[in-house]
Length: 254
Image 1: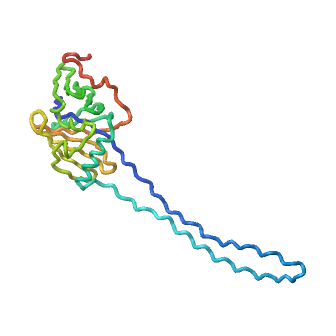
Image 2: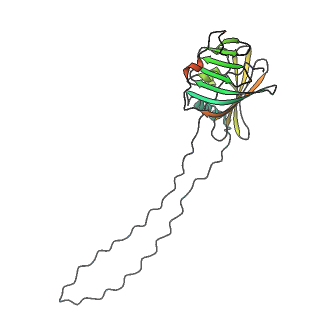
Image 3: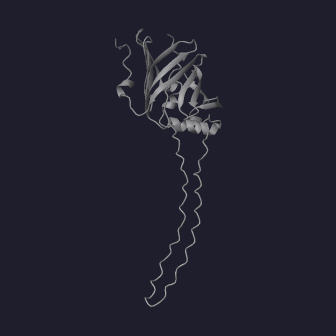
């Protein structure tokens, strides 16, 4: 199957936990303490005490106030969205995920994605695909196990290599051309003019609920567009370092 060379990217997970609502409590009413009078002398006539007035009923406590639930929705403010994207990418140094890749021709491929920042990444495609993409921090290799071919590029030539950095600052690293929203997502559109062949256009899609990266698109300089959707993201396990070693050209496992 055709594999667009625009696929050099990974996804990270950032959960934004909801803060609990604290209920207000009502203080109990203060009660007046009456001190007992001294006992009268034996030779004195004791006056019969008048009955005490019944205490006024305490007012019923007001119900605890609750904060109104804020509806989830996409981030429409570009500055806020860009800052949240930076925070998302800088929140993790390692991850694994399942991915589904769809090319412009409609063909699909699935596989496993591994990332350790800075600069290390592996796309491992499931059969019947025969491709694998490995980045070792300096170079990126596109390998075809069936044809036994390997093409190597400098990592600076690949789209989205800035997202393999330890510290991502989108406004400094790339050209942001648009921030838009859909019903359930925020979309940040970027351009990278340093990729091989010319300028690539990248779309990053963040979900409206937690602002997690769920998919991206890459349109290469020839206009071929590829979609990658992430599932089962795990950012608690660090992948084995051996996954990011590029074998010598011509060495392929059977």
